[in-house]
Image (cartoon, rainbow, N blue to C red; front, side, top):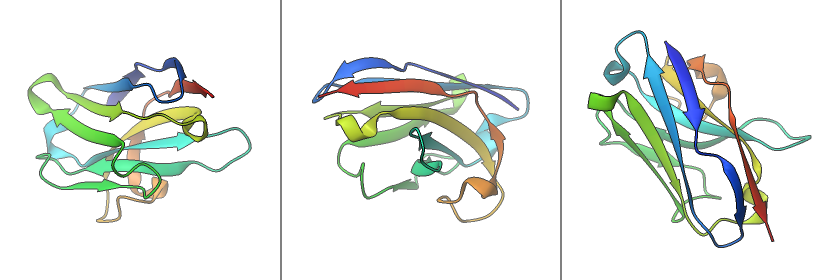
Length: 123
């Protein structure tokens, strides 16, 4: 599976961005997928995860109520709608696919990764 993340950019605090993750290769719709982020000097952290059908979603406490994860299996694409952005949301955002366990929150449990897209929020 090849993953291509896009949609990042520079946004003022309080604004919105939508990230996309386009997948190619093996059957995307069979996998749970997720978004992670990594800020400079920090470890990669879980942002949101979604099961294969889109019916089960998980969020980090820091983004609950502001971010929404979704997917369109017909388009082999996953999305992350980010609203009410804060300066602490600044990071490189990575999409991941093929969760190998039930633990959405651990980066080690995803088999495939995209290249990342930079999100910068100015205060």
